[in-house]
Image 1 (cartoon, rainbow, N blue to C red):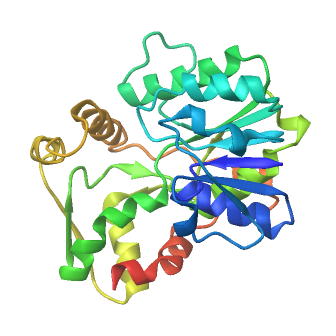
Image 2 (cartoon, rainbow, N blue to C red; image 1 turned 180 degrees about the vertical axis):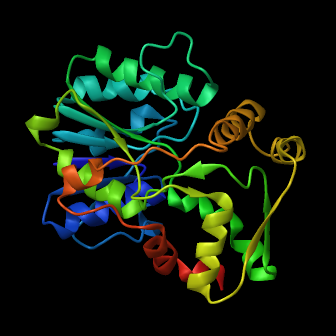
Amino acid sequence: MILVIGATAHFGRQTVEALAGAGRKVRALSRTPEKAGLPEAVEVVRGDLGRPETLAAALDGVTELFLVLPYGLDVRPLLDRVRQSGVRQIVFLSSGAVVDGADPQPDVIGAYHAQVEEEITAMGIDRTFLRLFFPAINSLAWAAQVQGGDVVRGPHAAAAASLVHERDVADAAAAVLGSPEHFGRVYELTGPQSLTQAEQVETLGRVVGRELRFEEVPAPAVRQQLSQFMDADFVGALLDLMADTVGEPAPVNDTVEHLTGHPARPYTQWVTDNLAAFR
């Protein structure tokens, strides 16, 4: 039995669907199972990460765990429960911001995910870490602007990323869950090409059928605005990570293909799959 924690978020949901589609025995954790909207073959169990005492039923009989966490959650109470349950493997969706061997990590995003990786490693069970930098779903933040006009405004027009389709993350997770050859491994997932933010918006426009353009906004103004409703240190780290990529092509590797047997999906495919959000 595979348990997916974070099963109703983007990456968790796609992973549940990939596992169920392959005939794997999968269970999903949800605070509101009646609203989960997952495939009928999936066993949806009620539980709350903020109340670890509610997780016993979800962990019962589980052998592998796919873990997608909200940033900043204290993972230790959950791992205490997992340690007692007999889970044999944890696959954790971590961050490409983690720098191996860095102490301290260069930013709060890397520091949080590195700490979770360390906590999992200290358990002494089999583990696999999938590190993801800039997922393609970040483009959903532009949806309202695209719906309202032909200009997308944001910081760092020349910031580059090799955007990863969430279905590729799901396929990679499904491939490593329960596979001994991946125990103890760390994989960095990338998309098939490096695109600047300006190029992403141009691509989005071509698929949508409109001429869109990116207009750069000074990063300090964006930082001030986002910090009103998001953790300020997280916002600062995210913008700094973007700034570090300006003028440098984003790394591209073939890890998705190595793990899944198919090439990573291009950004145009992601836009096509999410077209309704931009219309």
